[in-house]
Amino acid sequence: MSIEKKPGKLVQRVLLSVAHAIIRSRSRIKIERNDTVGLKPPYLILANHVTNWDPLYINCYVDEPISFVAGASLFRNPLLAKLLNYTGAIPKTKYKNDTRTIRGMLKAKQHGRVIGLFPEGNRNWDGTTEPLIFSTAKLVKMLDLPVVIATISGGHLSFPRWAESHRRGPLRISLVKKWEAGAFTNHTPEQIHELLTEALAHDDAEWQSHTGAAYYGKAPAHYLERLLFICPHCDAPGHLRSEQDLFGCTSCGYTVRYTPQGKFAPFTHSLRFSTTRDWNRWQLERLEQGLLEPGRLATWEQVMRDPVHLYVSEGEQPFQSLGTGQLQWSAAQEAALSFQGETGPSYSFPFSELEGLNVQLHHKFEFYAGDTLYRFLFYQPRTSAYKWLKFITALVQRTPRLN
Image (cartoon, rainbow, N blue to C red; front, side, top):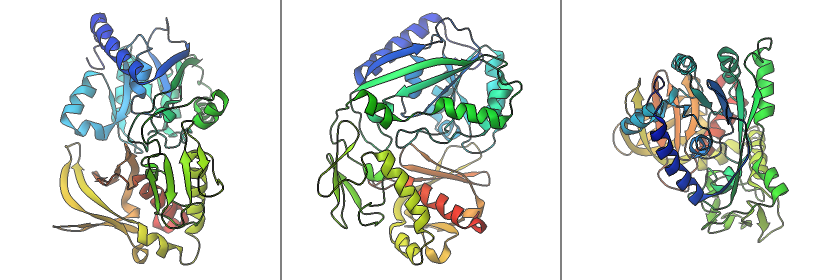
């Protein structure tokens, strides 16, 4: 199978039967609406992105095999590249202009394919839809296809991005045909972006509050420190730690319990935030504010040091290891981060040279410097790649000259 050639009906039925068995063993899935039934391709599916299983969840309930747009770094794994090419996946360099993606999507349209795209560009961290990549609006206008909006509810609560394991509970999927071909002929990209943002807006915490859904699994709070890194009680960064269903600060003792409803319950102190969404929103605002306060950078310097494996990919080649060492940031050189290897050379990365900063899965921090892709793999499970992404983003926004 490829973009040009879809699998036969027998192969499709076998693959979908296996996929259905897998996802039904994991979650109680209900399809609330499916406008793709009887809908002839080509058309475009835009979806919120909450789990690694999202492409499978969606394709199980769409009769046609979907050509999903996938991160280009995934294609650097030779075995995974074969699988992605077989399924007709279209490579996309994250957060950078990539003409291959445009060519691939036009080819998919030409060959009558269903095209799947996650406009957030990455899985969201707290169950709320992230800001959409603006170029999606331009792609939608260029393709001029019917647009189906796929909404996955309960996906974040069933397997949060920060978590290590799945939690069993309800999952709801809707596939709504939102626009016909030609709907955006007279719209600007800015207008289309606004419409897409509204259509794809979803909040798992709000949805759970309406439905009362519960999700059960082992050690539900485990590795919450991958997402949350500032204590709301003592304001200290880098001292939060999870254990079973508890999450607390080793500096001040503030501790909460993470419940099957995906909410926090008080344990040692009065509750500051009831959801990861609210805690995360506060910590990102606090991060930006704190970087403007005298002496605050020195506090962050103490926690911006983590052990990593460093990998590099030149062009489109597979990743090569540059060794193990420490990723670190210093207030004395606030416009750069550095890698200090255990053996071999050290590397410095000025923020002004970095593009496409993102996190793959929960533990792979990536960026481009020129045409070279660098990947920092956080191999200690309690370290936070998300912390690095948000810290650097906030630091660059704080001081425009760093950009």
